Length: 230
Image 1 (cartoon, rainbow, N blue to C red):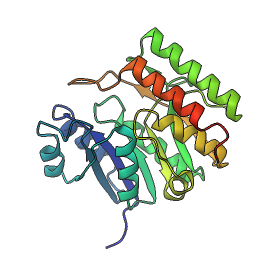
Image 2 (tube, one colour):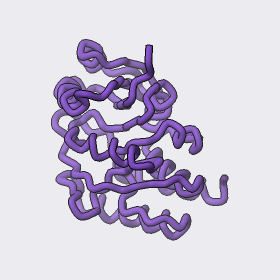
Image 3 (spheres, rainbow, N blue to C red):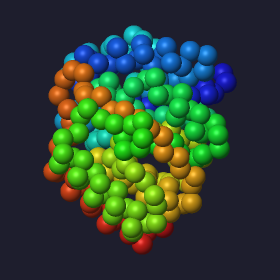
Image 4 (cartoon, rainbow, N blue to C red):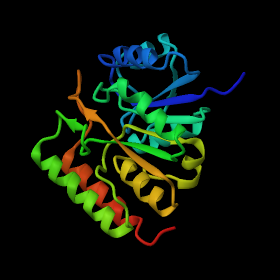
């Protein structure tokens, strides 16, 4: 069987209210592309307690399991992916499937990684209170100063990758520092990164997993841990 052109990686944990609608919208946008959708379910307290996986499988998605955190789930999904282009997105309907083709086009144009940005013209968010905007800007500034990059957004998970770029970065972050690690290691590896505008919507249903202050500390540790490595 020929490998799919696209792999969509979606970490999930108790997302039965959102996953069906998301997969329907994703499939509509990917009509005409050979693709696979991989749901990576679970967290430190075990797999989803609801029907997330059952719904995902009924709609043709593959399901694998992870018991650590978002970063670990993404890395596991990346390793399981067969596509030439690999895309990560959240399960809570905050990422607009209508932007998928923009992320695909970035890799097709020759970039190694294409990153959605809420802070470019054309991007935005209806789910970022002022303290999160401030925190994100602090992280962006730190990474840009320390690593010589020119990012406008840091902690946003809507991204596309060439398969080769993921191998070069050797990602290890298990938690919410994963996007920051990707930005840093992409810069260190000399990968070609394109930011494109993206609009983040509020979570549709269910409980969010982000814990702003705890996860902010994790991101700071990720930035510090990568200084001078590789």
